[in-house]
Amino acid sequence: MSHRSLVPSQLPDGGDAPWYVAPLPEWLESAGLRLVVPIVLVNLVGTAFGFWYYGFHPLPLSDPLIVWQLAGEPPVMWAFVPDSPVATGFVAVALGLWWLGRPSEYWNVLAFFGCWKLGLWTPFVLAAFADGFLATTPVPMYAFLFVSHLGMAVEAFLLYRISEFPTRAILVAVVWYGVNDVVDYFVPVVGTPHHTLLPGQVALESGLGFTHPTPDHWIAAAGAVALTVTGTAVAVATRRHHAGRE
Image (cartoon, rainbow, N blue to C red; front, side, top):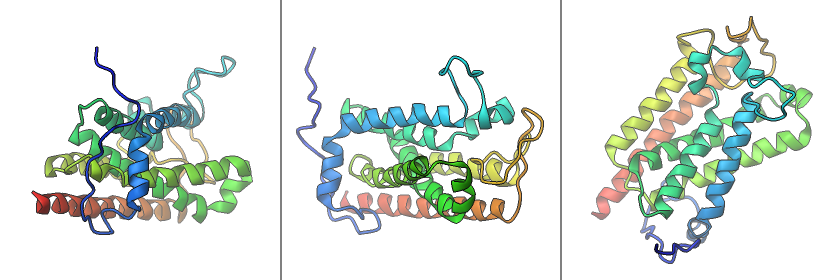
C-alpha cells in the first residue's frame, strides 16, 4: 500500500486569475491546500456540530433524538433545512477527494456554492438581526457562528485551484441551491418555508413548520437569492478563466 503524505508535495497552479475569482493572497490559498487534512477534519466536526445545532441529538442521551428546528419541520423536507452543515460536508468531501487523488468536479462546485452562500448569508442575518439573536444566543456562540461561517467563505476560494468549474457542474449546483431558495422562502412544498430560523419565529404544531414574520423573512430571502446569483456569476467567471488557459 502506498503512503500518502498528510501534506501534498505539489499544488496546482493558481495562474493569473482575476481578483474576483481569486481574492485571497496566493500564500493563503497554498497554506489552505497544504493543510488539507486538518481542514477536512475541521469541516467534518463542523458538519456534525451543525446537524446537532439544527436538532439531531444522539447526545446527550437524555434528549429526544430529534429536537429544535428539525422537530418542527416536516421530515420529508429535512434535507433542505441544515444548509450550513451540508455545505461544510460538501467541502470536506471535495477537499478529501482531491487529497486522495480522486477529485470530483461536482463536489468541488457544490462546495464552492455552499461555502460562498452559507459563509456569507449567516453573518448577514446575524448582523441584520443582531438584537434578536443576542437576546437568545450567548455572545461566545454568536461570535463563533459569525467567524466560523466567514471561514467557510474563505474556503470557497481554495476550490478554483483544484477544479475547472465545468458548466455541467455549475448547473447542478445552481439547481440544488436554486431549489433550496424556492423551498426556503417562496414555495415550501410541505409545511412552511424551511430556512434557518430567525429571531421571532414560533413553532406551529410539531412537524408543521414555523411562523415567518415580515419583513425579516424577506430580508433573509433577499440575501439568499443575491448570494445564489452572485455565486453563479463567480462560478461562471472561474470557468471562463480556466477555459482561457486551455
